[in-house]
Image (cartoon, rainbow, N blue to C red):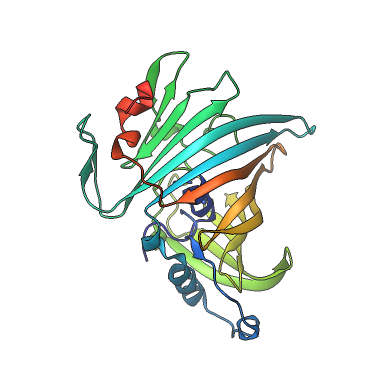
Length: 290
């Protein structure tokens, strides 16, 4: 099993923020679903994960571009809005950006750059994730700050997603899986898949429950737990086909303790757009210039 499978958060963020919804699965290729699909025999957990793997077809995606509206909703119903542009790029081989001497390691690495365009207080704030590390550029301070591992549980720019959610530190071999039951969700017959950490250390979550569509093998909802407490719930509320790929258009993350929610709404999405490697350099992060 490859590192980028089996995480609903990172699968969605891989599509939206290209680092954050691969961690908990993959990109699903749009396909025709016949009546026999609904009568599919029961699967084991390993067979279900294999089906998710087979459906992901990551080799067909070299890059992503997304225009995203982010709605922040507090428990009282007050709404704040952010707008951002996301750029994501696959790095299949060791690659240098040619300007800063930065090098991407690994045969299956991804780079992600997020640039905020609104509100004015966040404009030109940029977030870079690559080679297992994360950096934030804050225009008010005119400074690049590396995100420390101690900050992985901290909120990403006031959203219900954390820096840890947007990292690539997921190792599927460290988890055990079981299919618990089958349920109907959003009109979709789903398997309920439990994932649990085998040897817990400092993971942000030690157990998740994911509702996986029986027709598309797409995750529709994931509940995240730590030490028995329900921490967050992620739901994919709208899915559309973009360039032949089933793509989450509206995604909601809720923090259970506070009732605060973040909604990611895709306003534009392009697969395999030509993106220069220099876009993902620390020079661009700080200057906004290639």
